[in-house]
Length: 487
Image (cartoon, rainbow, N blue to C red):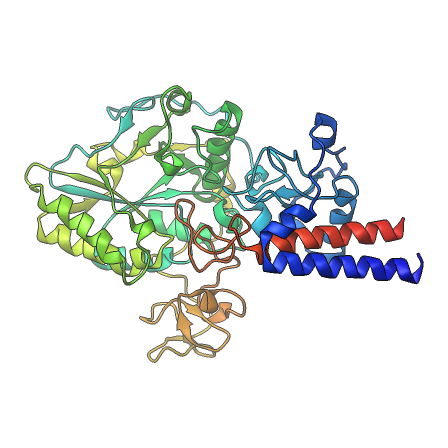
């Protein structure tokens, strides 16, 4: 390549970068739309058997993968308009191919146009052939359950966890001796699979059962069950069964559809009934996912108070939905709900108990799987303690002989030796020897954490932010030009 050709390429790239940063209009005009024939929409796949984007750690390997894909699809875009990504890459919610967490995390990742977290499978035997008889008096699908049947009870339910706030929530429920029901999601929002022993989720789920809470399913990756195929719907339920079975030795008979979406005519309710599930909805929604800030959470408290004050504990019962993915729900709203319900004469119970369903009916055992019998230990009630002799932090500092676990300042020890529950405490630099640490900072499937980069509540590829969208496009074009220079 001659020097003047290289200079021309560099000038072109500089102009593209400027247009991407200062406005998406120029970016869209700069990218030539691909032809619409079916052959061009779907590039020839690159054979990479057994590839898992989460396992790609080597940067050079990732770059090589992207280069191979770009040579077949220069614009590096995907979705209904552009077709599928190159083999081994994910299609993000904004329609760009890649292998980062932002590209591959479900439920936003476009599962029909590339790899996604949802395509990962938990290890261990499948549960598909386990018998699923309908036992007891509580109705199974296609019928939906929208309320409790035992007067004077209130069933608090929490969706989308476990997350970095779930440990604090369990501490709070322990203090009030209040059973609750957790609708568990297996791999949503880039948090990694719940049965991965290197992540904190399995211990939290075990702790839930030890503390008397009920575990229920909220699907594997929080896809809308009314909008996916019958095969994908079954995949969502069976994968979550395997993951929960890998932790507890059994899997739930109760579930809640993500977004509470299981519409008539989709086949969803009938399919869940065939799988032996009770479909649980709720009396009212606290809207906590809309109000996750100190200035807004009072709105959720008002919703809760308005409903409970309209009833009578002698005749009424309540089935409530909230989310343990939100800080204000865990650190503010839940204690208000517990105090208010007690003042009005309601007793906190699990969903199964509020329906008079014996606890033996809440789960299906897998007698062919013995992995849980080989575990050397089970977590104790309360946060996991370090083996080293440590004292609970009394002033918010941590490290050395002081742990954040059990302190009033938060359960994570930051790189600055301070306790807390924020991303800066629990994320990069977090000290595992002095508290909990989250490998990823998971956000909520129904309403994403506004502090999580790339979440629905933050700026993302889907937003009209020219800097974000433009950067992805320019990166793709730069790589494409590099390939051209090599050829």
